[in-house]
Length: 93
Image (cartoon, rainbow, N blue to C red; front, side, top):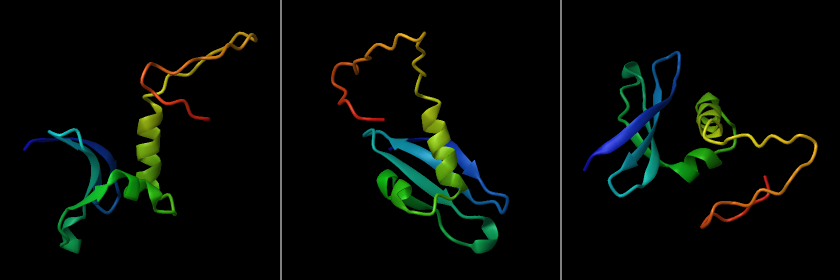
């Protein structure tokens, strides 16, 4: 099984967090602790990663990464409703 991964955040102490996707399109986060801590890499469910309450820098980095995928809707004073793409549930932002 291959895993695609993109660096989310690298801390000053050497910890790294990656956004990963496997062959089955499952998306998750991998935390690789720094070498001195001796800990093994851990796989974290994406929702569990984002649900932890303190919003550390790695969370903010992931949210910033996600935000770059959203195109801003510009209006010229006459706002028009924008419908979601087919198959996408509408939500209040």
